[in-house]
Amino acid sequence: MIQETIGAMQQAVQERLLHCRTAQDVQAVRVQYLGKKGELTALLKGMKNVPPAERPAFGQLVNAARSALEAKLQERQAEVEEQEMATRLQSETLDITLPSRQPVRGHMHPLHLTRRHMEEAFLRMGFSLVEGPEIETDYFNFQCLNFPPDHPARDMQDSMYLTDSLLLRTHTSPMQARVLQSHKPNEPVKVIVPGKVYRWDYDATHSPVFHQMEGLIVDRHIRFSDLKGMLEDFLREIFGASTKVRFRASYFPFTEPSAEVDISCVMCGGEGCRVCSHTGWLEILGCGMVHPNVLRLNGYDPEQVTGFAFGMGVERIAMLKYGIDDLRLFYENDMRFLTQF
Image (cartoon, rainbow, N blue to C red; front, top):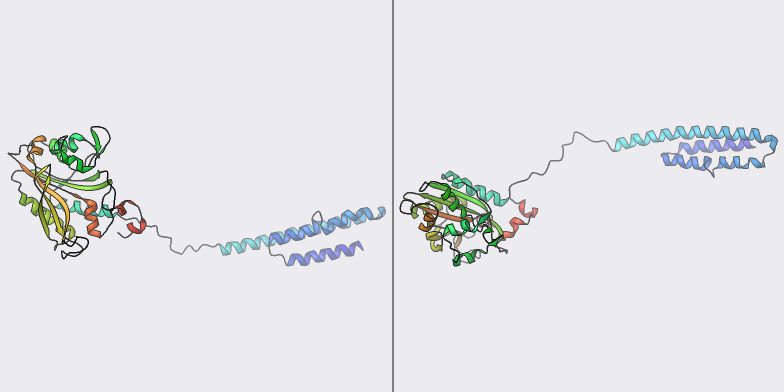
């Protein structure tokens, strides 16, 4: 009777193992027959009901069946694991012939593009490029440029003072004084000064940090007509050969005479539109002949040499060049904006 039961159990295990496809399926068969509550384990637990004389033979049959079943389970376990690995390798195969993912390439910021274009134009005219400190003394930022301590023009620059005598520079003009003082008296000077400047202001057309480009020429027999011709050539290179340029009288403490420079509107070509307030003109920069007081304060003799200076905002140039209507876009790091350039 026990032999028939064990034989039927082995036959059932053999059929079950043929249908096992995963290691979990094989483990389920193991638990059903050899687990703590398995069918073969139940036969061993029932040995107490077998007559004592038959127990040795009964135990041998059950243990032999356990060993046989364990061997079959281990064999099938190895087979399904090998099949699973083969299937996994097939599904996870990498096609090394496919092209790799290309890295995202960076590009220059529109302010950098604009500054580079401006610098290249001036360098071709024979200017040298110099840079200066962004933390400046009141002496260089104002006093050497004909801004005495009580001068009302100081109030127009919304300065950020660090101490009573140190501030974040409000313009690149302090480098005029530094360059002149670093040269021998009356020695010719021809420089541009790009860099960051700082003023306490923030809206669609103003930022607390922005970029300027200063220009200075000092030599014998420098005239306002030289300034006019040079700026006209520069502005037409930046905005196109058809650009019209006009000069309007203005006032700056460090130049005399002084002028504001306008260009024909880049949006409407001078016809009049919302951007230019229907005037056909856009203000672009300030300029003038170097004030005699500035020359004297920095070791030059205005009876021997003359010069001119000009200054412009890089953001202003970039906004007009690329049709940008909000200066804050330059500093928000929005990729939707930056990837357009």
